[in-house]
Amino acid sequence: MAQNALARERLFALRETIARLEGKPAPALAAAEQEALAQGRKTRQERVLPLLPFGVEFVDRALEGGLPLNGITEFRSALSRDAGATSGLAMAVAARLQKQESAAGRLMPLLWIGDAVGTLEAGRPYAPGLRDFGLSPERFLHAAPRKLDEALWLAEAAVESAAFSAVILEVRGNPAHFGLPESRRLSLRAHAARRPLFLLRQAGMEEASSAALRLHVEPGPSGLRPLPDGSKLAGSIGNPIFRLTLEKSRNPAPLSFLLEWNPHEHEFFPVTEPNLLRPPGEQSAHSGAQLPASVNRSYRPQAMGALLAFERAS
Image (tube, rainbow, N blue to C red; front, side, top):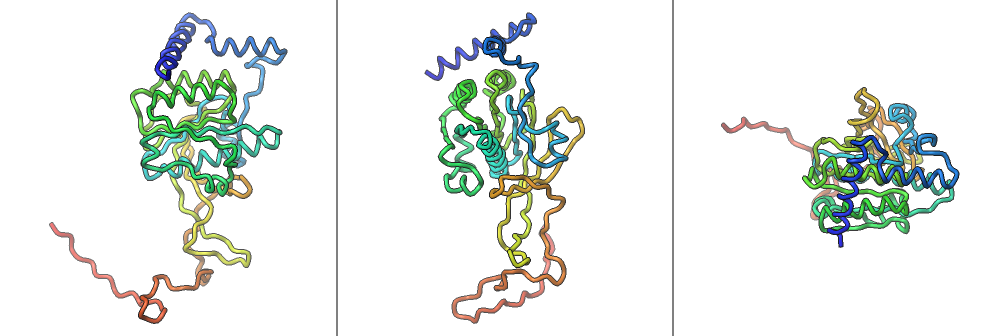
């Protein structure tokens, strides 16, 4: 069934390519235009394109308003160990989108299409963790196709149905079966349905695609967690911080910045430089020993001896 659907999609993509070569509108976009005109709405060119702002002024200004919600946005990590940061950024963006839709009275589900190999490397979304991150688990659907062709078919069908607030497609590396033609087909479906598709490329290199925007994602070091009494808790985990580099956009200038995600307020905050060290004289809120003591000895931190550097063996 998936193979037959994939063959039909390839036929549709070929027809769209021929239409573009002949200077005619693509069938999917033309159908969307005719439907809009039949319902008395403005045409696609006259309507304002939807955007999802980060809520940080200089970032939204560089992105000309925010993330496009009628096309492909790619979040890329170069290393497997950064897969958690890429997934975390996609979840944060999806949480902001759910917040924006809830304010407008729309409660649509979110679809996450996982990659088989990527799931083995980085795991799959965890429902209690989704709620802690700011997402609604009851509006989160997870699919686990066994093959990339099935995942692409599912992504196209989900975007074209316009039944989801967003579709997140996870891809491992740079597979040969997911190139520019497949990316272009997904982009046309997203444009026609006016729905966003977030592409998570785990441990992949830059390549040509139809994504309107691509961000390179790396984890940033979390700062010290502030406590109500004004002290800061060392040795704990604060809010996640993402180091983002703008790789593809209409803005030609390279841009790299740090953003902190607050899951309680569903907001991003700019970070100038992570607060990794305590100011001089400021004590940590955790007053225990830096290293645990042995069971048969008194609980007191042991003094660290001098370090001896050995010459490297030839």
